[in-house]
Every structure is written in structure tokens, then in C-alpha cells.
Length: 181
Image 1 (cartoon, one colour):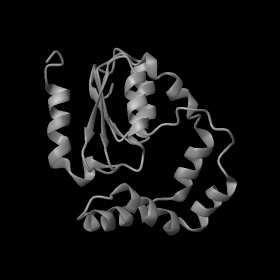
Image 2 (cartoon, rainbow, N blue to C red):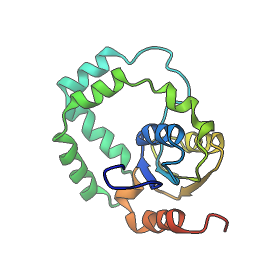
Image 3 (cartoon, rainbow, N blue to C red):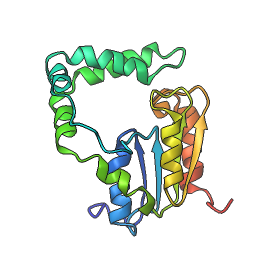
Image 4 (cartoon, rainbow, N blue to C red):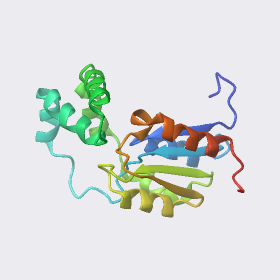
């Protein structure tokens, strides 16, 4: 942000990206003008136990066995096969150590505890067919001070990828529109 001279940009994120964006908005409220989150996911309750080491090992040894079912669950919309195949291809180029390290090193309870401290206008976009329950998006939105929730009918977890023709106008209106309307 400093290198590009951005003093108060809007931040748009998706899924678990809300965790980092939320910390930025809370720790530097003067730096984030608006926050939009598509299909937010965060753990609102502390984990009862650390992540299962067998799950981490399965990511390392059978990445494809995780990727394909996960990507298919992200895009449940009819006619998504081309997007699914493209996303599987991209995911297969990733290193499973990234997700493993993320699970082991990040304290996911920190962002959730700070939800009530986000003061900037926030838009939560969530699909009604998302693998992440709508109830979680509702809890996130109602816990924040200045958030509104927009449910996208029949949309899955990443409607920004699957249906940008629907998501982008909503984002543009929020990011550039008059918030008092």
C-alpha cells in the first residue's frame, strides 16, 4: 500500500482471506476505507483440539485426493464443470506445504475475537449453496459494527469466480456507491 501510495483503499477478499483483511482493518483503521468479503470463512469458536496430524499428512501424500472433492464442493452450481476443471488444474500446481503451514502456524481465534472492532463499512457476500453455512456468514455480519450481508441465491463458495457477472456489479456498487443509500 505504501509503495503504491494507497492511503485508504477498499479491501476485497474471499474465503479465509477475511482473517488477514480483518486484522488489517482493525490494526490500521485509517488504511482501510471499506471491506468486502466474498464467501467468508473463519473459525468463530476456538478449536477444541489441534488439527489432526493425519489430515495434514494426507494433504502431503495425497494432494489430489483433497483437491478434487474440495474444488467440486466449492462450485456446486449447475454448469460449473469447466470452472471446476480449471480450478483443479491450478490447485494441483500448488504446494500442499502452504496449507499445512497455514494450519499449523496461524492462530485462527485472533481474527474472530476482533470482529466487533471492525469499524469500516463492510459487505459480506455469501452464496445460499455455499459449503460454508449461511449461518456463519450471518454471525460474521451481525458481530461486526457496520456490516451488511447479501445472500446470492443458488451460489456456491466462490461466486466471484463462477459468476463474476453477478458479483462484480454488487461489489462495484458497494465499493464506489453512496453508503447512505
